[in-house]
Amino acid sequence: SKGKCGPPPPIDNGDITSFPSSTYAPGSSVEYRCKSFYVLQGQRTIRCRNGQWSPPPKCLEACIISEDIMKTYNIRFRWSSETKIYAKTRDVIEFECIPGYRKKTPLHTFQATCQEGKLTYPECSVIQW
Image (cartoon, rainbow, N blue to C red; front, side, top):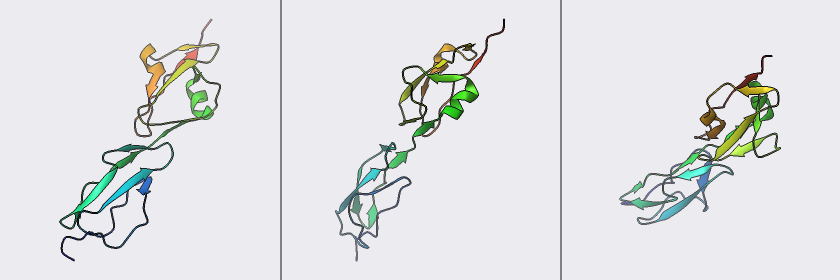
């Protein structure tokens, strides 16, 4: 069993694309795939060398932007009438204030980038007369 590897390491929100085996010969490789909306970071393929697997990739989490979240900040999508969007890591989402509200946070915050499931939302406040 010298040089053989056991099963490849599991990763969160992803899996290998082939049927798993209990042992792998030296030089064997497996490929990983992420769940929908998750972005693969790192090498898709890992190899068995000297009884060890090379480091597996990560699956970066998606951002889920819902109507409830947008109501909290008094914002809406700038270019879409959708009420819920799934955004991948590194996706940029543009927001605007809902009618009757004005920007409370700086202009640049209205272009938010999804980072591993997290998004910093812009905020709008009611217009005072």
